[in-house]
Length: 212
Image 1 (tube, rainbow, N blue to C red):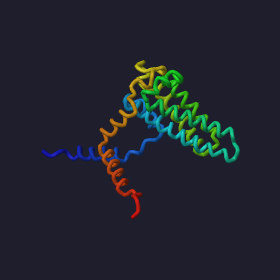
Image 2: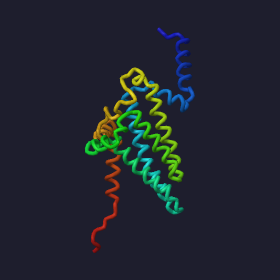
Image 3: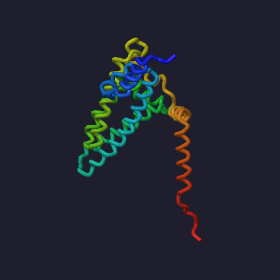
């Protein structure tokens, strides 16, 4: 029995409307955070923090160039930005050997509220580097801190009390090498491409042996 023409046309119109739907705005993407599954959300937050911490180090290095103009204040601020960026990177990478020392001296990082406040602090510090990359890093860090606070206020896990602003964000963390291993296991094509690239580069490398 053939399907009624009406059902086919309605299905086509539905498919066409979904395919032609406009892309989501930034505000819609932010609102979608409160509907995201908790493990995925926390993983994305961690990856975002790692990328931001790396950006901090580069922003600090660019700010050190202010020594050329004898702006010593910007140089000192840049050094602090580098140190805090490295600290934040080590914290998010969860290196087991360093974790006890970081927890003892920077315990405020081990709560969602404390970590978000620290992100804001570094973000405002970036504006004192007197460098273009520093201003960009500062804006990105402030946005990142805002998203952290938004998740704490609007995500159902926090609203239900399963998580709180004082909870330890590293409770579900795995070590950095385990994260890398899991990533390569779940993405074998990327690992294969990286291995092939490494072998091709080593094969094309110039030889510096003794001359005849």
